[in-house]
Each structure stands twice: as C-alpha cells, then as structure tokens.
Length: 303
Image (cartoon, rainbow, N blue to C red; front, side, top):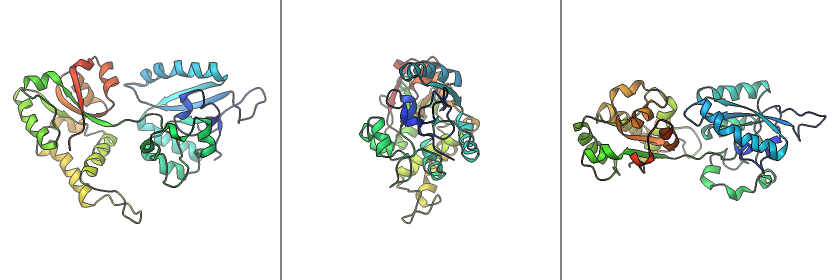
C-alpha cells in the first residue's frame, strides 16, 4: 500500500495534518498529482462526548484550512470501537484516508504494516521541526530507533477528579494522595450516602489504561529485556488484583459499575452521584454534561 505524502504538504498551516500519517488514496482534480492534492480525506477519532460534538469542533478548523491552502477536506469522525478495524481494513485493501487519528498504543503495530508515512527529518521540517513536540509524546509514535509513524496531536494524562461539595460534607479537606487514603476517605463518603469512585467495568480500553497505571506503580514492565511480551509478571498481576479489589474488597467502586460502558462513570460524577473519578482530560466532557468547573477539583492519581 503506497503512502500518500499529502499529510506533510498542508501541515504547515493547519493542525489537521498533525493527527497522524497518510494511509490511503487522496484525490486530486484539475490534472494535479497526488503530491499536490485538491481534496484530502480525514478520519478523526471521537474525542468529545459525541460524534456530533466533534463535527462541530472540527468543521470550522477544516474550513480555515481550506481557505488557507485551497485543499478541501472530507472528514468522518470514527468511534474508537470501530477505528482500529477500519484502519486495518484500509491497510489491507489500499483504500483508506490520507490523514487519520490513531491511538498511540497502536503505533508500532500499524507502523509495521508500512502503510503510514515515516516522519523523517525532511517531513518534520515541513511542520516546524521535531523540537516542537514533547519527547514523551513523540516517543510513543512508533518503534524505538525508527522514524515515527505519526506525530502527536492530543496528549492526555489521567488525573483524580473529586467533587468539592461531597468532600466538604464528609469532612474531607484534601484529595487522597495514596490508595489507602482513598479507601479511608471512601468510608466517610459512603456514610453520607454517596458513591465513592466511578469505574467502567464493561469498557475494556478504560480498564486496560488503569491496569497500565497500576502496573507501573508496582514497578512492572510488559516486555522482558530481550523484547518478549510479559503480561503475567508479579507486578502486573498485583496491579490487576489491586484494581479489581477496589470493587471486590475495598468496596469503594459500586458493584453496578461492573456493567458500565463508555462515559457512564463520567455522567454519574457530573450529576453529583459519585465523589471521585479517574479520567483523562475530563473537563470538556463534564462541562458538556452541565457540571461547572467550580464544582470539582483535580489531583494526581493516587500512588
């Protein structure tokens, strides 16, 4: 599957092309070549509370891009549940978008297909240089030692969101810094008739993210020194048990959350039904659900 270089062409003027790398067949009109396309196709990942919200956010930016470059962008917001399968189908068929968002956990495997544009020094120069990106974000865009298969656009980190009123009503003056403190605070919160911590047991990707965080706190790595995968080491097993025990043993996560799907725990928190939430960049999501920024605080994930 050939890699279209169009992504690098328009990247200077617009963040669209920073989403990831070219993967398919862009179209050009008026006798032009695919190196100078008149139309680009873009698959955007669903970052907001709904696909419609993402469309409203992206379309004005794409209109600016067209005005600046003369290049029209046909875009589609793809749910995370469908995105990887769509990309793999495009890779094998050769019929895919010119620009797409990918999750950084897919970077190395998608890079291995050869479908993504290598971001070498020449291509980075076209978008302002490699130094404009945070090293840790850039480091998750492909295999170490190879040119990145993508460039960072969205970087999000997990944090502990807590409801200020629920904390005050329970006599808690500050957010917990350790898991033991979280469990102890949970008993005070439950005494006031509120749920403690939200989770989404039916959301596989969310659970994997949490297990990664817990595993790193247990000193685990997921590959051996010779590069072989190792997902059953003691640190990872302890991490999974600790995460599950927040519901099964410590009882700070409601048992009903075992069936929760995407964004249900966010909704509970926004409605004031749950005191705490572990989430990535939740502010926009909470605002869209009617929760004021004055109603909650943000703290580091407990350790």
